[in-house]
Image (tube, rainbow, N blue to C red; front, side, top):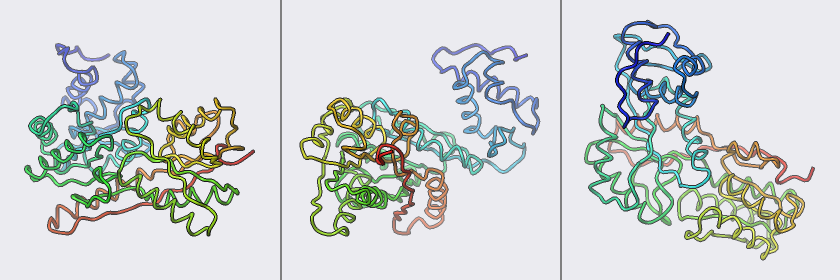
Length: 373
């Protein structure tokens, strides 16, 4: 039976209350250094959802009270063990219908290396109008509790968001917090590195996707990009390199989605541009874009992949569960996290070293959206 619940602070989320109850049982030595109940067991015992139970366990990991072992479960941390190194993982994922899926791409890698420290995953929760002082207070909240370093996924959405990211990095520097960027540099064409960066090799992804479509006999391949960030420019570079290596007669077709468009407006815009240009292949900058474009092509009477072969990026769950499986270049989430940890350790040990950019290759997964069955 669960212990009596402490008074509930209605301002805190339900998973925080649950974490406090579980923490009390841990401190009382109820599970000693043994295995904790499963997420499902906790959810059933406390009459909460599995999502709430999972979030509560993650919070206990962040506090250093629980450790997770791959494919084994959660265990009470040993008392008297070395202090757990605490890392902050701060995400600025583009808002939209697939925001949670994009966050999951980053989150999954850290969940798989949970034994290498306590990772507090959170968004940079400041409004678009927030100024430098408010962003600095957000940095102070991130640093609270003995954070050793920050892994940061910057925004790609707007110049205003980019200024906030610059203020965030300035706040980290002021507090002596080392930062490793995840997957993309700060927004801007040909922007120099201001921190270490560990990313998927998007240039390799653009090249492999293009070569795949060329091998299928596609003659008019488009590359759909959006904001001026390193992920998009690197992918575009790989696309252009593959076309050039294929020889003459294959002019590039670059479709840059106007930034004023919301996601649901961007998909029909891209489909219209593909039809107008007579494209028979398309490389989209993420799987949810690929799915949106595919649906819009269907609405225009075109067949995918017979008329237009479509490839996405990141291999998100939506592309795997869509009725027409989406070919995609995978995101090496666990490898990125493990490498980012090594880069962070080097930055702490040698703070004066030049900033490093480390690119890790994914692989092309071929599904129905590009190959005629």
